[in-house]
Image (cartoon, rainbow, N blue to C red; front, side, top):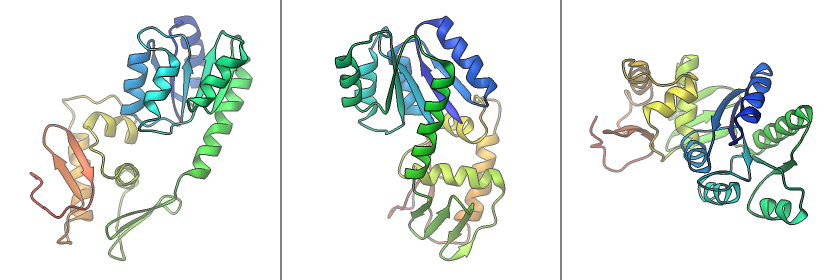
Length: 229
């Protein structure tokens, strides 16, 4: 499970990262609102823990901007114990609210509850053109024929299908599929894309996996097949 903590108090942020890491979470940190919003938009997280009082951009503004494009579950943290602050945060789209100081066990329980709730709401069957992807069965079919994919190839295809129509950079793909920071000297993403493309598009006249030069890759139906491969 991937988690983003947007918190400017370094002691609190590193305490949470250590504790949640011990519980099996992969945790990213951001110390200001601008960086937090960038990470929240660029990567897919299971939950975001968002402090209200942040430098650069406060938590309310981060949440409002995030909700324009993504519905990632958000728990807001604040030292304020005022009802109107909590109402304002929930009104902006927060899924839960905790007032500092809080119990780590309570935070963990709330995170787990939000993950369960979010996964129940996510579609488990995806379709892009004549491609069907079953997330539960971990199978993919093109024009009714099952694709013979490895585990990583399926994870890559599932990510692209879940964000169909969106251009995904190599950095995003490496972080989401391999849980690594992308190294420009490594061609793991290009190799995986090439193998997936041969299985997904090779036998079919209509191509779904496209390269966008200088930006990344996108899964979508196109009328114009000249995508710069």
